[in-house]
Length: 414
Image (cartoon, rainbow, N blue to C red; front, side, top):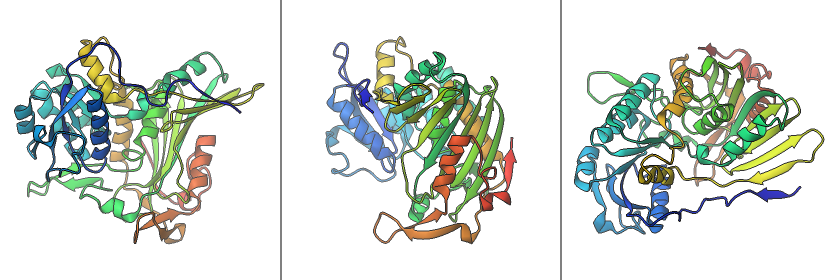
């Protein structure tokens, strides 16, 4: 089988007339924020952006700012003050989930455009508050589902529309990842469903840091995008099976089944307790074949009746570069992931938020094994890899697949 590369794996950033680099502030530069810092470094080298500020509780050191002129990068723990001082035109927000809405509105009040990391909010109410504030301010806002910048998404949609695999029968996604126990201790909000708001009044805020809403949220969002069910009113039913092997509040091994207003069925099974971690993927099932999409690799495999397998690798448009181009063309270049296109995903977040607490797996369902990092361990759910893969193949949940621990586990419906 030959692999055809449709476009370069990473789209080149040199295009169009020379423009002044756009001043950008990054809020949250550690953890996943390091990815954004590296991305900013590449876009700065290409002359597209200029990093003018970093918002962190502890300032970055010279090594962390390698590649930038540290004297030109203002650092402050006060996001609003940093935006005022730097005159930033774009803010990249990669902070704890429960801070997303408030920080987005701080930027919106100042007319600063946004790249807001996923999930955009921890509840549908907060999502609506963010979206309304962004719209009222008239700023551009891109939600950080990087997989939706893949050119493979439109390619797969075209294949399905043209009947390449016959009648669509459903979409199933699988994610088998591994996270060690320290991952859930990396921050006070990690692995939490709710958290004290720090006011001293006993009030709490939603976090909803589960496998489907944060680490493998792309599996959910990508599946919905391939189906075309992205709006807040596009889902008619949501059913969840939420479990945990780790000593956390949130779920680490879960399944969600979605029914869209057009009658489509979309399922996602995911775990952070895999035996052998692998690339997550989405399968589009048809009456005469299937399409598998490894969304982190932009790789597509088409298998259909009467033809040999065809594999292609596609390019990807960086979401921050897309936002910069959107501003440079006065909106002529559309945003790839505006808030409205994440409404269905946020319905899933809301269903998980409102669901009963994840069921703890029995002790004999998991074991502790060494992790990749020295002196670190992680929990492995026995047979999780096979269950996740079988779910994507059959559009069936853990209970339907006969997992012993799922038979007595709680299933929540919304």
